[in-house]
Image (tube, rainbow, N blue to C red; front, side):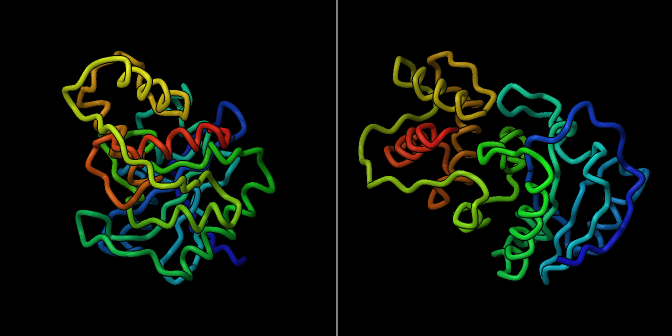
Length: 239
């Protein structure tokens, strides 16, 4: 794999070796515009890598340094994701500028890059997440079109498709033990969702983020039977 050096000044020191990979989409009209922003000292944002739609890979920040890509958020109780993760920006206009499927060449390059990164650092499958997983209230990327299943089949990340599981749906406004158990499951997987037994707006945001990653046929924030079955299966896999 050939990596093109495109240094960004936007980084500082890590507090510990990375144990997560966070995937983003760039959410800008072009890859060139995204690279320019991620290298602009005034923008104060960056990532370790940018992967273009044609599969070209740019390195902006050394993995040993702390890039500024995650922002405020949490995964498995960790609230400094910039310090603990490698950030990969995947060129795509995103929901604002014409969200579209990710080309095969681009995903091949992402898989090769993740092979490379995980050869250097200890990163569990449960530590491979999207930006929306760590910040469900404010982020959607890399979104419902991102091929998480393909990544998992290549050995990166969690994925499971249980048999159809019709049953009770839980939605915003509901309360009770079933909601408490649902929230506890999401917390165990990694989301920041302290169980309260009340299905509030935060719970809706977390369910929607989970669905964008692990369901993808729906992302309405309603915890239907399929959503709950996938959550349970992922927890059994080691989430």
